[in-house]
Image (tube, rainbow over all chains, first blue to last red):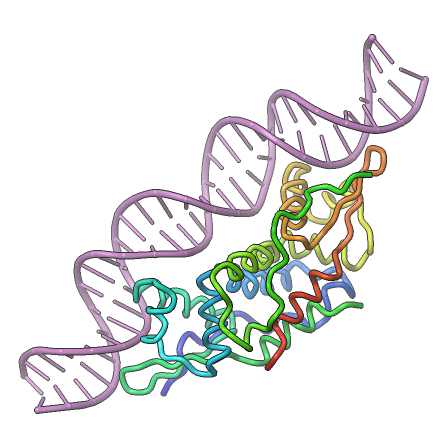
Length: 112
Length: 112
DNA sequence: CTGTTGAATCGATAACCATCAATGCTACAG
DNA sequence: CTGTAGCATTGATGGTTATCGATTCAACAG
């Protein structure tokens, strides 16, 4: 029921990277988000959740071929980056993407 | 005159991450691109180049407060990720962004 | 209360990375 | 040819991270 790993990262800036040089503090916050996507396993995990809409942790170990602690580690990092949210239902935790974060990244990468 | 650090990373896939689960090989290639943006100094470097249009290496050490070898290290990583290209003019190297790479990332992060 | 099951945490380890001083390479000036 | 200036490379170091086994925590069933 409770949301896991509430994002610790403050909402980073909104302006596109090409519009103006990003500040030091914004860069630090944004780097956390990109770092969350910088691992192949996490990228596949995120893509699975994004394409399925909602996925239980227990259904990630198989496709990703990683141990349960490792899956938990990766979901935590993605959640702390604000890219995923986890919801506990009974004994299971279900993950889904945070669309606003995707839009934020898209805005950042927009041209002029 | 020659382009430095020709990208070693093959053009990764084009489909959005939310459309279908990304393959292992695509994930590996894409992770390289996100990893290039996962460092605060590189993010600022990239943002400076993107907003200025074209920047000489010698004009990066100051704003980024890093040594010359470190700047060279970061430009190399961004170039190998296909995000920057460097052009040698005499004794200087000028960097600019690769717009297609930004568009690729935007497409990847697009919703449904 | 007890056992079971799914997930988070801990501890350890190997691999990776950001950083800089020292050095090498390259282009130009004289 | 010699010196200089900008950039790349090397080597070393301290910090970070991906991974897993073992353990703990949480929720449910009986």
